[in-house]
Structure formats: structure tokens, C-alpha cells
Length: 119
Image (cartoon, rainbow, N blue to C red; front, side, top):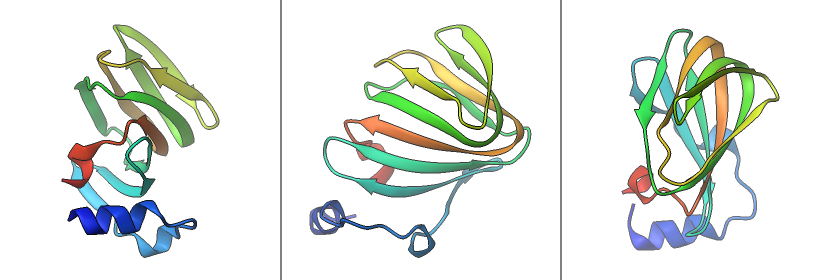
């Protein structure tokens, strides 16, 4: 996206998910970048059963809602099974990832926004 497109997107007060294309990330994982500005980003991530959000780390703070399904979540070597309505929080630079146990959806919030997702 160009800087102009990012600016235009930042100022939208209302975002309709149906107008955003689902981006295939790979191996049963797809996402929609719902909204963002330079400080915050919201992303909807769809997982097929058995799909893996590989262990990784980034400087962003992340808070995630399990919108649907069941996931084994690992943060800094600790694993926990979370279900619909549960939330996990990832401090900056901690290694984390998920395994989808039951087809599901995550709603990720990042601070600051993930420039690598739109670049």
C-alpha cells in the first residue's frame, strides 16, 4: 500500500469486513486486516483445524481474542488450551504461537501496527 492508501484507511470510522479481501497466509491460515493506524492494528485470522501459527516473536505488544474455536497457545514456553471468548496477551519480543485444535478465528490487536502486514 502507498502512504496515501494507509492514510485513507486510517481515517475510516467504520469498516465492513465484507469489503476486505481474505489474504491466504498459508497452510490453512487466512487473514483480514480490519483496521489500523500507526499506533494500533486489528486483524481477523481464520484457521482450519490442525493449522499452525508457527512460533515467532516481534516487537509489538499483542492481545488476541479467541473469537471461535479452540487453540493451544504457547507463550514464552508455557502452553495453555484456550476456547471461544478467552484472551491471551503477548509482551513485546516473547516467542509465541498457536495450534488450531478446532476450526476457529482469532482477533489480533497489535501496538504499534504491524507495518510488515501492509508493506
